Amino acid sequence: MQSFADLDKWFRDVLRAMEAADDQSWRTHHVATIRKVRNRLSNISTRCAGLVTDDGTVSDLPFGTFEDRAVYVVDVANLEEDAQDLIFARIVSKLREHLERRDLGVKHVIVFVDELNKYAPSDGQDTYVRKMLLDIAERGRYLGLVLFSAQQFRSQVHRRVVGNSGTALYGRMDADELATPGYMVLSPAIKTKLATLDKGQLMVRHPHFTQPIFVRFPRPAVMLGRDGAERYPQAAEVSLEHAIVRSLRQLDPAITLGWVKDVIAIATEEEVVRARNATLHARPEDVKAFFAGQFRRIVPPRQAARSPAQPLRTTPADDPYGF
Image 1: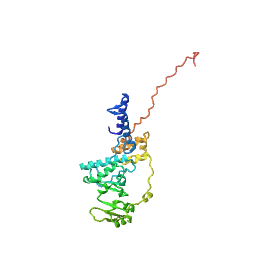
Image 2: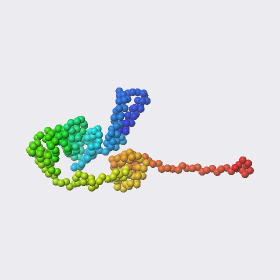
Image 3: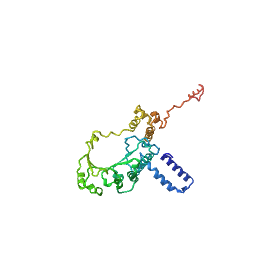
């Protein structure tokens, strides 16, 4: 079995064989248990749409060919907790596996997690994401796996992650956050300065420095806040045909909108997306032929041959019953 579709087909065959034999169990497993397991597994592709597919389409990070100073972004903010666990476990496990074999393509990897207090909180349910983050913070350095994070409230991050951090940077924060036990090591003067920091000022703490150091960053050469969004508004949503053209032109600039419309004329949206993903994954030399080959062939209509009509037999002129 290579995909969820193959797994579902296997379940259907087993259940169909049990119904035909009027049997209530299969290898000591009751039919109700088999149906429950099937429902649990088949719902993964629905609840994790876009991450788990039924057709076996794969879109993964380039493990083994990581480039130096390259950035790979994985957005899990809007996913369910199960989907977040699935993605994070997959990525971290593969990173550890390749780093141990020294065939990742680079010697060191920085895992940056935004809003760490959400994924590794100090309280709440123990999720797989939190376990993996704790493992990176405690045992990732010998592999070259380093954890960087950013969060609003450091006091809400798991203490084992905070305790294993070597360098910490603090921005301006309010008095309620500074009153938590995590800031008891700071003197009242430093707390007062942290509460009144200007924009662009940060405090740095590192084991090599006996006292915190305050630094100021220059004004960034980018638009801040809503300035960029207001000046460059988000583009309108494009149609499926235009989206396919935009994706395939990365492989073949000669692809036109008219050609795409002709190819996907009778295909469903699911078939079009599957063909697009297969083409981007395979990156064939002949993009047009490969993309068109993913759809059902259109049989051109043919006119049936008509046999020549037989002439009517004429009646004699003296036949009284003729017409």
